[in-house]
Length: 467
Image (cartoon, rainbow, N blue to C red; front, side, top):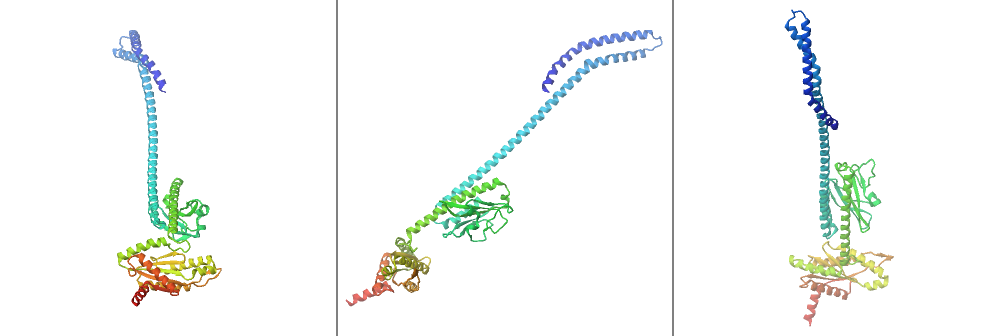
């Protein structure tokens, strides 16, 4: 259209330039011819014809002659020029509209690209925030001393990573037959304190289990609320399943689409991986620490831990001005028992006595296997009277202990020595030595009895007075 318009413009301009010469010639000839014709006609008319009629006829003939000439040589080029100008304007208008459409299209594209970039930037910012929180959580978990100490940390960071959701962490018991609720966050808290491993599809299948739509999803049996969407994420570490991380989704987030759910699943998977490794390391650390301070046969503390604890308890006793009781225990004729029933039966007796000892002491008391068939109990804040009473209770209780190993085993008896800090020594080691001496005095006097360091002191004083 543009090329056609621009090709016609030079022709119209050329014709328009030739127009004045042609027009003057034609007009001059027409006027001359019409005037001549009018003069001839009116010469032939009668003399009474008025000049007015002559003028009218003359002007009418002149107009009739000049109209086609004026139209063809003057108005027609002008009309063609106006038409071409309109076509050019229409073409320019179309080009303008096309350019405006392109501008609108490009603006829309730029707007969509800007929105997408903004969404990507927001997503990247959210991803960086989540990674930072995960890194902080891992740092706190790695510096935790026990698994129980790590659970409140997990709750705190989980509520930040999933602020609109609820969740819970379940850990396997040592028996592996039940998962216990260790921590939870959010509004939709679990109703049960634990569940059987077969009640969770994630644990059965060894992969994440997601239920969004109740009509098509297979729900886990440990989920009591049948309406809430959720994700169960198995927690693995070192090739072992430690538990499951359960996340209850809010309805608004669940309806955002598959991409949003996949993002939450990835975040939950990363969190489960970090928590699993941290909990496994903490449990392994606890196991190693337990092996280093506990006797593997009886489960009591070992001699090394007892010596460290005894020094600590001495400082506490001095600071708080309270007594510290010590009981040294020996199983009577244990070698003869082993020779009669065998060493396996003897180990069974030691395990049973260790369990009895743990049952009869307070939570803050310390029971240790001193070596072989010898044991030691440290009683914080116990006077001589209380320590002696506790020793007598142990001596009587062990006689009632019934142990089965292929056959009922015979009852055992104890010899016990009692001493109290600072009454029987200025240091904890002196008191321990005093209790040990009292123990040997009890064995010397016939076994199955309790002897105190006080009795040894009185006996030594009496002997010196007699000498």
